[in-house]
Length: 195
Length: 418
Image (cartoon, rainbow over the protein chains, first blue to last red):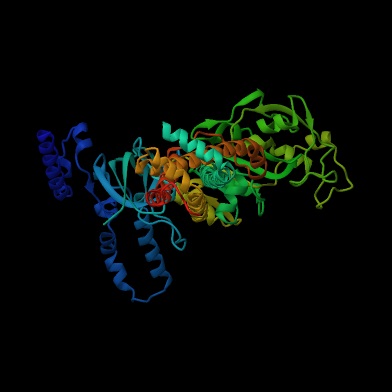
C-alpha cells in the first residue's frame, strides 16, 4: 500500500516536471507505451494545437511591412485582399506535428456524434461551440475528434457544459485533398470543466 | 410475526378506508413511475433511431423540425429541395455516402418514403444495426415497394400484394394514386424505429405517381403506369438527404458550406447535436413533470398519515387492550409502522401492476400516434430508489400516530371515555 502511494507520488511529480518542460524538449521523450498511459496528462491550450510557425503573431509579423503600408482604417481593395490572404493563412494552418502521441488534457466544448446507452461516446471537441453563427466554425487544427474510453461518456443532458478531455492525442496520418486530417483522441477520459 | 397478524387483522376491520388510501398511493406511484418510464423510453427511442449519419440536409427550417420530419416522421416538411442541389452537395470531396429521402405520401395511415437502395446499405439505428429483410428483396422496379414490419403486421401484407399509395398523409379516395399500384417485394425485420411504420419505394416510384399531378390536382391528361415507366423519370426534388463524411474533423466545414450554399437555401444538421438540443429543451418539461409527480406522491403519503391519525380515536380501546394483555410500548408504535408499510407496499404493487397493464395497452397506440416505441422493461435502479424513498417516508410519517397512540395508551386505561 505504502509502496503504491510512493509510486503514485513520484509519478505525479514527474508528471508536473514534464508539464514544465514539455514545450522545449519534446523530442527527447522516450517513454514506453505503458508509461505513457499512466503518466499524468500535460495540460495544453488550444493555441498549442497550432504549429509554432503559424501562430497568429508570427503570421502578422511576416506581413508587417505590407500591413504598415495601409492606414488603420483603410478599406481599399488592396488592403482587403491582404487581410483576406492573412486570414486564409491563419485558417488553413496545418496541425502541430510535435504533439503526436502526447498524453494531453484539453478543455473544450463538445458536438456529439454518436451515443451508446444514453451516453455520448464520440464527439468533436472545439474551443467554442453553440449559438454564434456569425463566424465560421473552428478550423481543422482547432477541432479534435474524440472517442471516449469504455465505461466513460457524457450524459446527453450535460452536453452543453465544458469538459476536460484527456488521452493520447494522435495525428491522423492520411493527408487527403481536403487538407491534412486532424487530431484524434481515442480512449479519452472526460471530466467536467472546473477552474 | 404475531404483530404482523394483529396489524393485518386490525387493518381488515377498517378495510374500506385502508383500501382507499392504498388506491390513492397506487395512483400517485403510477403517475411517478409512468412519467419516469415514458421520458426515459422516449429518450432511448430517439437516440436509437439514427446513428452513424453525420449530417442531415433539407430545406431551411429549424434544425429540430428537420430532424423530426426527416427521420422520425413527425410533422411535415416545410419544403422540398431540388435534385440538382442534392447532386451538387453530394459531389463535394468530403462526402463519403448519401441517401435521398422523399416524403409526403401515405398508404392507409403509414408514411411512404421514397429513397434509393443505398438507404438499406447506409441507414443505421441503435449504434450499428442496419436494416434487414425478413422476406423478399429490396425494390428494383419503379412500382416495387418494401414495407416495414408493423405495416405488414397491421395490414396483413405478404410478398406480392398490390398496394395503392395516397396523396398527402391522410388517406382519402380522391387522393389515391389508384392507377399506379405498387407490388410488395420485401418486408423488413422489426427495428423499433419509425421505419417499421413506413412504406419504402424508389424515388422513381414517387415521381411516377406524381407525373400527372402537376397542377396540384390530377390533370386530365392521364399518364398510364406503363407510360410513366417508359418516360425514364428522374426526380426533380427530394425532401431531405442523409450523408456521411470521409473524415469527421471536416464536419463543421462541410456543414458551413452547405448552410451557405448559394443556389438554394439549405440546412445541414448534425443529428447528435440536434438531439442534444432537443433534449435540453425537453429536459425542462421533464423536470417539471417529475416535480409534479413527486408532489402527488407526497400528497398520497400525507393522505396515509391523515388516515392513520383519524383512526387514532377508533383504536384507543384496541391499544389499551393490547397494553393490558402485555404488549410493550414499542409494540404499539410498530403496529402503526407495519400498517403504513402494508398500505404503501399494497399501493406500490397495485401501482406497478397498473403501470405494466397500461404499457401493454398503450404500446401500439403510442407507436401509432407518436412514433415512440415503448419497450416493456424491468424497473431500473432509479425507480427502485423512488419506491424505497416512498416507503421510508411512509415509515417516518407513521411514527407520528404511533407515538401519539403510545402516549395515550398509558393514560387511557381500559375504560375509555368517548
